[in-house]
Image (cartoon, rainbow, N blue to C red; front, top):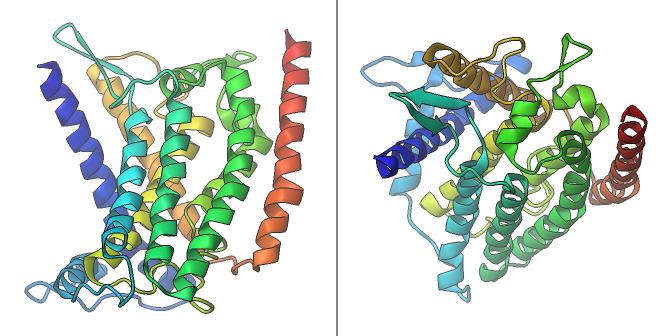
Length: 345
């Protein structure tokens, strides 16, 4: 019975993440079209039904499956094949520690709506995100292409620069909620400040919220931080990829966008919490799961808005922002947070 419950949770999370990531390929086209006063993708149809272009992700998948799988001459065939699997695999593994609901009680049995209840959930997610960049670096190196290698090197330097800020910025969250367990952090965000303000991370750590959001967008390697790809400059680490291996890199970008939205929701916007609503009855738990889903969808939309609004940074601007501005601010945030906690106590 316990194994069946765990399998169901894994299936539900993977189904939701992969379908949302696939839908984002349509959202990206339609949202950019709306912002640029265009119609957007609307040609793919089934039995004459276009459904506002919703069949385009299916058409993309069919096209990628049918395309020839190409490995460049002189490339490392084994690593060239493993690289996209590594990127997507670790991005999906990170969702295991993210709670999408509270404890559900059915027939006297408690079901924790989280795949893996880890008391160091934040460290686990950071480890998975760090491992994902290996797929990008291996793709650049194994392609035997200088432009691909340059894209892989950019990805590694960008990861080092912004993961430091990302890790330091959430130290304030850990200090405020006194836990590395994401489920416990979400529960403590359900408390109230002065009796009426939800104790969400964005309220207790506003600067950390802004810094973390900037760093997590850089981790997704999307505009304005898409230097590893840089279509107008070097094409990127996937220059020598085609077919479904390119499709896996493409899908990884959107899976990481969903992961970034889920982390923003969990750490700074109450996770599955609904202000002033408490309990673990079936109705309340369903509403909490729905609230978590809507928050994640909102941040996916918001990240798309940023993607189609801001231009790409130059490489020197990217490094200067990470090392000279965001890192000092994140360190200052730790000092101020510690001082406030000391005075508050």
